Each structure stands twice: as C-alpha cells, then as structure tokens.
Amino acid sequence: MSFQAIKAIYTHEMLRFFRTIMQSLIAPVISTSLYFVVFGTAIGSRMQEIDGISYGSFIVPGLIMLTVMTQATSNAAFGIYFPKFSGTIYELLSSPVGFFEVVAGYVGAAATKSLFVACIILATSTLFVPLRISHPLLMILFLCMTCVAFALMGFIIGIWAKNFEQLQLVPLLIVTPMVFLGGSFYSISMLPTIWQKITLFNPVVYLISGFRWSFYDTADVPVGISLIAVFGFTILCLFTIWWIFRTGWRIRS
Image (cartoon, rainbow, N blue to C red; front, side):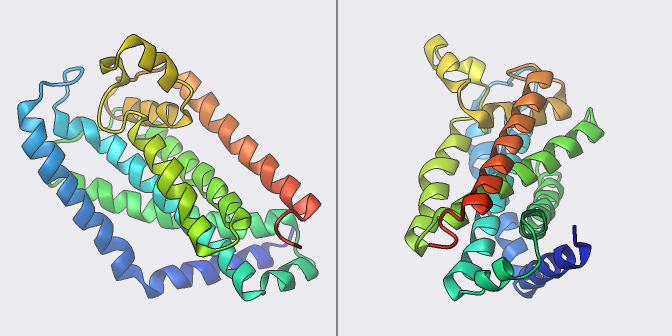
C-alpha cells in the first residue's frame, strides 16, 4: 500500500474543492435556511410534535443526511468520472497504484467534503431550532459511515456513467427519492402499515433512523440494525468496486 499515492489523489481532490469553497459552502447554508423557513416555520408551526420533539428539531438529522448523501454521491462520481473523461485514468491504471489507493484517495476526499458540509448544516441548524445530541460519538460514527458509504456508491456511478447525463441520472432519479422516502422529514410510523413494511427495504431508512436516534433517543428501527445495515451497504459497495477493478468493467472499455 502506497500512502504517497493516496495522499497525492486525496490532496488533488481537496484542492479542487477549496478552489470553489464559497460555492460549496454557501449553497448548503442557503438551502438549509430555506428548508427551515418552509418546513420548520411555515409547515412545522401547523404540525404536532413527533415523539415529543418539535418538528423543526425533528427534521435536522434528516436534513443533514439528505445533504450528506447527495453531496458524497455527486462528489465521488464527478471525482472519478473526470479522469475517465480526460483519459488520465489510464495513467493511474498503468502506474504501480492498486485498487485500495485509488479508492482511498477519491472516496476519502469525497467523504471529507461531505463531512465539511454536514458540519456547516449542523451549525446553521442551531440558529433556527434548539438541538440536543444525546450520543455524540454515535452521531459522529453514523455521519462518517454514511459519508464513506455514499461516496463509494458515487464512485461506482462515476465509473458506470458514459456521459454527463448518466452521471446526474442516478443521484436525481434514485438517491434523492430514496432519501425523501426514507423518513428525512417524517417518522415512518406515520405511514400506513403496508407502506411501513415496504419502506424497510429502503437502506436510507436505517441511516436516518440511526442518526436521529443519536440526537433524540428515538428511532424507527433498532439502532443495532441500523449499524448492521450501514456496514453491510459499505461492504457491498467495496466488493462491487473491487470487482470493477478486477474485471476492468467500464474502465478499460
């Protein structure tokens, strides 16, 4: 394993992020503020508390997860797609750099970017609603695991995509609906029984439920199952990337 290779890829990606840091950080602050104005104030003032938590506070974990998942996916997808688009990926493939170094560099950078944005949203949220974090260490664990898991998925999407349209297709048509249907802005216990059962097939439910539990000690599914689900999803993505590098699918073609 070459730490120098990981550092080179990671540094390159992070420098690209810091070149556009104002756009990268201002957009989440504005969108978070709008969410709180619309959902927290306009809609939340007309809603009852959920599990004893005001609606504005209840949506904070879901809002953070929504942004982290979309940011991690898009950052990792664009990060690996551009070397494919420009042809520089062949320099990586012909160099003595292995699968682990490439994944650690690109995915680590995408996860770090998402973590930055998550911290900004968390700080912005405190300006609008009262927050408490009952289990800070578990909150950090869930946040980091989600950043890594969805960065890995974005990495797969970036390799799969043949053009910019495909690059944006999965995040728009799959990731965003999964997040909205995963209990970001509501508890799945509010759904009809049949939809509660269907929703449990959505992996995002376990991420948001576990993350919300770390804040308020309330969850739609047991926190242990949430941890297993996140870990399993991460392993599945890692195995898929390993298979891609082993077979050269969509890389050497």
